[in-house]
Image (cartoon, rainbow, N blue to C red; front, side):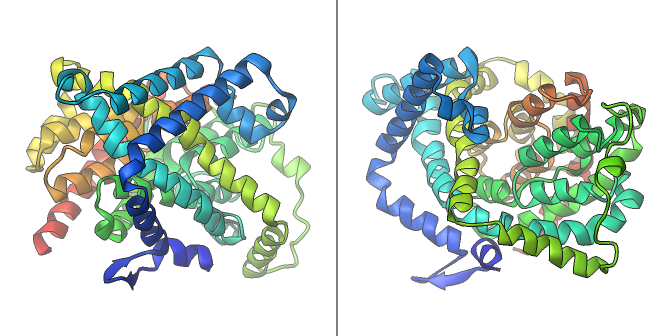
Length: 435
């Protein structure tokens, strides 16, 4: 209940209406306002130096800790990305904008405006998100949802756990869970592909973070409702469409291991009682050490992957979008769709959807240039409900036993964007017409 209160219940404080995490974020932004650029430099420096130290010396305590190893140890690719982000942040912080404006314009937009807000959000969300995720709410809701999973979404009831993990956590959490269950023979190939493509929902804290970066916090609840309405409709449609229907019903282990290895010891309980038992068992295992561990697990991907990636790749990608026709050509079908619906700022909005296939936060860095509230609303909704992205979903899928290729993910992303646009554009038009 405390987690729900932090995320979803607004209240007035010093004349401003916001949620608890919103008030905390605004306080920290104001407190560190004059030092935000330096804060980014310190974080990028620490991330690179820690990565370099671990890559060279490979200490045992890192390699034996799953969360630390997964996010810090990334080989030479991630080390080079973190080095680039470190050098760019130093250059932006120490160089005069007037003297080198053409070279640093896009980097300054990312390093001095987008990244500081994301850093503050990392701190706030890592403190508050475990309250929502790790005290039984996920288990309670997933057990209650299990009877409707097979008829609605073509996946077994246990898939509700993955769905809730993504809904109240992040889509990458659900991908990791799905990959583990597929490898152990608890999902067949088609069920795992459906979970990745259609039922791993956008996480609440990711939606909040992107909404905040667009400075659209007052529209958070309409955005949240719109995203989940579109995600629900997509979860109904996609499992019945190409390419998901062509994945085989075969198991990685050769047979269904779930019913063989995990009998249900609680058949005497009603569904509601079983949900309470699972929720209580999860909450009972939580302590301060677990809480801090979960907080660290939430913060690490954003600090060691998202922020360096945004800085290192954000500038060249935004330059490519501005000075070459590549992004314009890739976005042409989506641009035509937006023009057909009379959407505000259709070209820039369609370009943002192309960036979202690479990374959601890169799309945010680009989409912050949108002027109108309607276009910003649609950009937030489409980039989150598109779900598939290379830097998060793609990397996890390709390191798993799930037989999904790049073209599968690309096709699913395009289909999701087109269907979601048809759903979300009328909602955006109506919302901004009445406001």
